[in-house]
Length: 192
Image (cartoon, rainbow, N blue to C red):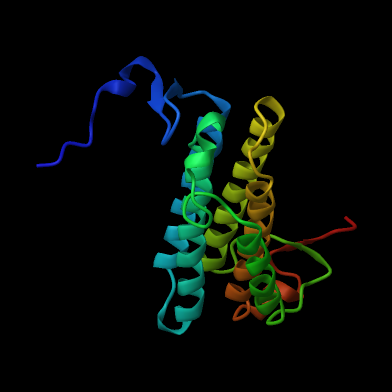
């Protein structure tokens, strides 16, 4: 039997992937922990995909895998960043750039209403909006880390910004089969 408990964290610290132990309240732990939450939220969304959503499910899985790359980068102390590998444990500019055509592809499938969209049109779209907000929280945590310790590479922050845009676009596509959402029900006007 594999035991998942080590008892090392009983003192309120956690081990970084590379770079020793830090308090569980450390800005770095908050950043990569928020990314883990976002990935889990995307996983719930992926589990809600039906047979007609195979492309969406594949894109969600890709996003989850790439969030693990971001998490690995953030779970590494600055002095150990040289041990990371581009695209495996460090976010690259190419990963950021690759999200933009995906966002465009999803947004080409919808016409946004002239008001705020409230989550909950469908179970899948609501879950993708939960994931979007979790990614935004992770982004805020990375900004806090940047302000206190700096970042070895700014690509991770840009990646999270695009990833949340992608989750928004995916959620809107998941609402496409609910046209009343785009006719006023479930939405508030931006101008009050």
